[in-house]
Each structure stands twice: as C-alpha cells, then as structure tokens.
Image (cartoon, rainbow, N blue to C red; front, side, top):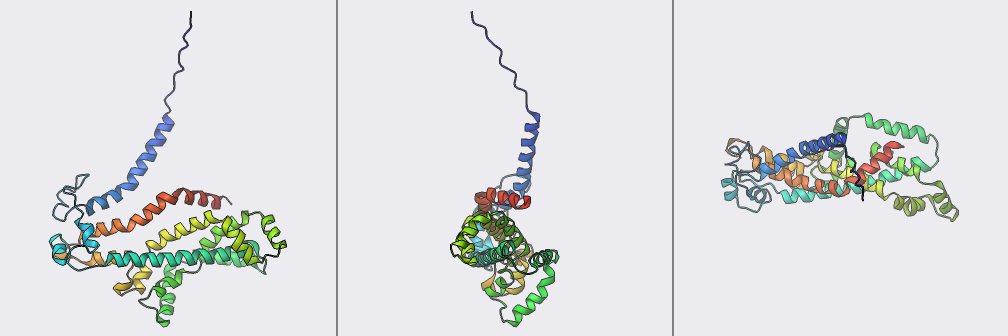
Length: 300
C-alpha cells in the first residue's frame, strides 16, 4: 500500500506580481511616445487626424520616410503634404556621425589621459587641482556659449565642422571623474612591475591601463554618443550653412517649413524616428554595460 503525499500548496507571490506589473507599466509608458512618433510617421497627412484616437495608423504608408530621405520628387512631396523643399537628411546623418564620432574619440582619449594623471601621477597640488577641476561641473554650459562663439568666429571657423567640434573635443569634468574612479581600482602592483621593467608612465597607460579599462571607456563613449547625437544649440549656432547641418538642426529646419499653413507633422515624425534609431540600437546592445559601469563608479 502506497501513501500519497499531498503536494505543498504554492503561495501566490503578490510582491513579485506587483513588481512585474510596475516594471511592465513603466516600460509601456516609456515606449508609448516612441510609438506615437512611429504611428504618425506611418500615417498620411490626410488620415492623420481622422485616426488620432486609434492605436494603429488608418492607412500605413512609407511615403513620409521616402520623402524625408529625398526619394520622391518635389511634386510627389507636395501631394503627400510636404512643402516641396528639400532638407538633405542623408547629409545631416553623415554630419551627425562625423560630429559625434570626432567628439567621442577626442573626449574619451583626452579624458583618460587627465584621469590617469589625477589617479596615479604625483605633482604639486594634485588633489586641489582635481577639486577645482570638478567644480567646473557647477558652471552652466550656456555661460560658455558667448566666449566660445567669439573664439570660433575669430578663428574663422563659422559654418565648419571644426568650429562645431572644437569646444567639446577635449575633456569634461564628469568624464575625468568617471575614469579616475576606475583607474584608482587597478592594482598598483601591475603598474609597478611594468615600471621596474623600464616602461615609461605613458607606456604603462597605453599598454596596460587602457586595455584593462575597456568597459568604462566603452561606457563613457556611449554616454558621450547619446549626448552629442542629440546636441542642438551649438551646431545650430555655428553651422548656418545647410552643408554642415547635423540631424537635430535639420529636423528644426524641417519643422519651420509650413506647407498649407501648418507644420508637416508626418514628415517631421518620420525624420525624428530615423534620428533615434542609432541611439536606440546602441542602448539595446550596450545598455547593460553602461548600467554596470555607472554602478561601479558610483560605489567608489
């Protein structure tokens, strides 16, 4: 005779349920504006307001994307609700890639140099200089626009890529602080062994410290990429020529076009959606590493 034992009753985990419910709600609220942008971009100008209360576009179309990418004629653009004027988004995307890439490379490299100097090298008033340097984070960026603009104008760099890149290409207090926190955690024994073998401080930095710091360097690069990709005011101030428009500036110019007395919302949302795709992919691929590195830096 066998005795069957009753299975233990599994208690419903309300705390887990509410946690997942809250996470799901936050995710939905976060992606809802992006969906509205995509829905508007997929709608035609004639059906946009008719289906405003619907969750899906009434008559999905890719014409708005073709229009902002310059794949249709001026007559077809006017028929679709556009202004017929061309804003070269492909050129703007290329300028944004160059603008962002130069700043990310320059800022990451120079910030790493400064951070290593503050973390490892010994020189008079090192800690005081570092504190003074960090205090620059309290200065609003808008205060620096006028002196920077006068400098760029005197150099003759208005309407040039170097004029847009110059104020950002060196280092920022946050970047130096962020990398210094990681450099301080690297065992000194590794660097001392290389020093005994005759390596110079720069060789130790280049051959040992940088390869061991790929995670924080990548994180800094991602954060800088996001910030510079969306930077609007300085490129708008310096780059008045259409040939140096970055993507945010091109979107602003596109917004000012008002065919038939109203903004071209469908075309504008198509351009806005194209502009967020690179940053979205970057965050999906590298988001976990960014969070881990920020948590590590904040714990030191």
